[in-house]
Length: 395
Ligand code: PLP
Image (cartoon, rainbow, N blue to C red; front, side, top):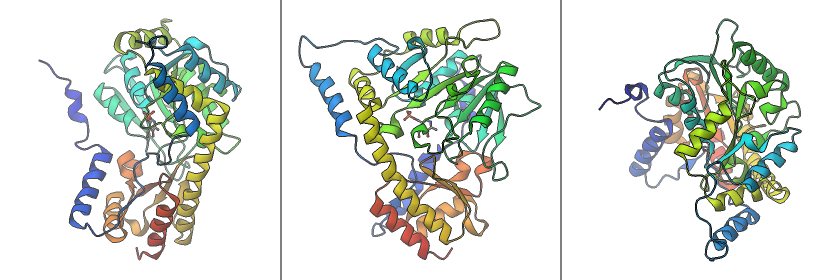
């Protein structure tokens, strides 16, 4: 057997595994210390009853002979794709039904779509810091990675490099972890760059529903020229609390082609119809409910509740005069570790001294060293308690 040795290039411990290990060790050794977790980006509020009921009703259908269903279409039911299409119309974006595929969350779609690209032959641009998946999958595929430093100087927004001809570009807006969100003009610069070098943009907009600013697009397809250079991945995880349910969608435009004219949409359909048997029926009913007017009203209510937690975190950072960003268009607050501490030093001190868990910035890339991420995903009471400890902390 010949294994894929590129796996040896991956880091020993995935960021969140290391956090979990250190946290468990602390809790085991200090069972009396009340630990509060503001680390992992997982939702905490329950599903909208309206959305949950739609999924329950779908399961109920499966109990009866007349409404039972077997395998569904691999690329998603028409009713779910139509819900996505209608949702995009709300942002003034026209998407064809054949451009949409329904999946079980975008972590898998973003990883699986790399099947379309020649292994070891692509130059891939990856922002630094960013959600670790893009780097990991590029390493697994033996691609050449060029990092795009995102620092306080460029307000954590990556800009197209003048001297590099890229093949693949990962963009995440609003960015996890920094919360930096492209303006229309900044994203247009990327679309123009990608079109000029024949590159594809893999656009992750998992947090688009958190966007508040009116000068920030909710989809890359709001930008002229994007349909010839970009694919987009939308998740219901953070929008509608679907991290457990698992649901998302991908949009691969019909006009997205390689230099010889091969359609990436067709390749993605070939890939999914071969290697995937379709997202579960109840989840797809869940998508329809979540993207409906009522579903979105409920989602927005939860998002404002999370943002109330964010206010508490930002007030505490303001009081301590700590530099931070994010928190407005995203559920994450990204701040500079005080006293010149490294990300992991700060992690250990915060855990040991005030029993609060966060995420070390360096886990998202080298440029994240010296930074830290706190998330709004917790209850108001626990966030308030954590921030009370934080304010009283001598660091
Ligand atoms: N993309 C980003 C930027 C994320 O932060 C996450 C999850 O935290 C995902 C994708 C994964 O989304 P899903 O739950 O749809 O797989």
